[in-house]
Image 1 (cartoon, protein in one colour):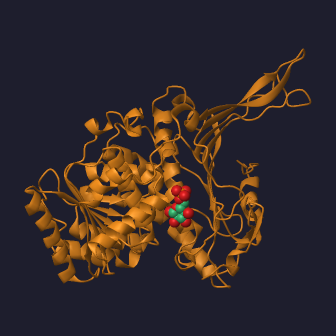
Image 2: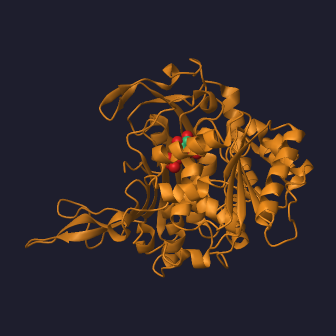
Image 3: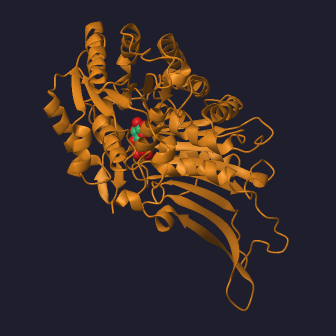
Length: 512
Ligand code: BG6
C-alpha cells in the first residue's frame, strides 16, 4: 500500500479538498524558491493524489530553456529538496504535462505567447483550465508581470466562471507602507481581491495552524486567554543560519522586514485575535486585521520599544563563524540589522497591559520558533518561594519548529516525605503522536490557492496595517544609520539592548 494511503490525515483529503483542472504558471521558474519549495510541493501533492487529473505546470522565465531541460531541472530539484525521494512513476505523471515558456517580464509579446500556450493546452484537452499564476521573482518585476497579466487578458481568464485565474504573490510584499500600497493598487487594477493570494509561508506550517485549533477547539484556554490571567507573551523566530549567499537581498531587507513585519506578526495575530465567527477566509482575516489595528505605535530611541543589532564573529555548532560585516556581499559599514526585538502593546479589552515581546535574528544560539504564553504567578500563600518551594510561572509554549509540539510548565510535588515543589513540564510532540511525515508549508499553500481557499493568505489591508506599524521604525533607523546599532556574538541569544527592553517590566527572554 502506498505510504500516502496509510497516512491518517491524507486519507479522504482529496474527497473534500479537490482542486479543479488547473495550469500552474511559475514566474521565476529557474529561481531558488522554485527549486527548493515549489517543485517539491507540486511533486508531493501529486504523490498524495491531491492534484487534479488535468494538471499542467508551465515554467516561465527570461532564460530560454527547452521543455526537456526544464523537466530535468525540476526532477533534480525534487531529488535534492523534496521531503520524499523521487518516485519515477509519480513524477512522470507531472513531468508529462510540464512545459516552459521563455520571455521577459515586461514584454507584452511574450505574455501573448504565454496566453496562446495555455489556449493550446485547453484546446488539446477540450476543456477550460483555471490558471494559477505564481509570482516567484524578485519584487522589482512584480508590477510589470501583473500589468502584463492584465493587458494580455490572462488575469481575466474565465472570470465569472467558477474557476478563473488566480495569482499568488511571494514575499517581500513591499518594503514599507508606501510600496505595499502601490503594489496593492497595481494588483487591484488587474485582479479582484478574491483572486489574490499573498504568501506568508509561516501560515502554511502545521504548528501555526494548530495554534488556531488549540485556541478554539479546546474549552480550557479561552477563559484564561486575556489580561486577567496572562502576564506576557514572547514570540521568537531564531535562526542559526547567517545570511549565506543572500547578502545582496538581505542588505536591502534586514530582520524587521524579512521576519518581524510578516512572519512574527502573523504568529502574533493568530495568538491575539478574537475568535472568528467562522473559519472562512474573510472572517479569519477580519479578526487578524482588527487586532493588528489595536497595536499601539512603537516608540524608537532611548527607552523605546525596539532594539536592533548585527551579529559579530562567534561560534555556531562548535565552529567559528564570521560577523555580519565580514560576510560576502555586505557593506562593511552596513546599517542593516540581523536581529530585531520589539515590545508591543495591544490596546483592547482582552490585552491591555499585557506586553507582547517579539524577536527574530540570524546566527542565534539555536534554530527555534515558538510562542510562549506566560501566565501570572500564583499567590505565594501556601507555597511561598524558598528552599523547599521552587515555583515557576505557568507557561504554555507552542513549539513551531523544530521539535514541533506544545508544552506546559506546571508546579508539582517532588516525591518524598516532606512537601517540596518543583516546576514540571507536560509535553506533546507531533512526531510522537502523529509520526514525522508532515507536509511542508508550501504543499498546503499551493493546494489552498488551487482550491481557492484564502484563509492562510494575507489580505491587502492586513499587509498594509502591519507596514503602517513598522514604517516609522524603519524610517527612524534609516535616519540614524549605524547609531544605536547593537551587536551580539554569533551563537548567542541576542544583544544586551534587547534584554533591557524586557528588564523595564522585570521580564527576561526565554532560552528555549
Ligand atoms: C524567509 C526569510 O521568509 O524565511 C529567510 O526570507 C528565513 O531569511 C526564512 O531564513 C525562514 O523560514 P523557515 O521556514 O526556515 O523558518
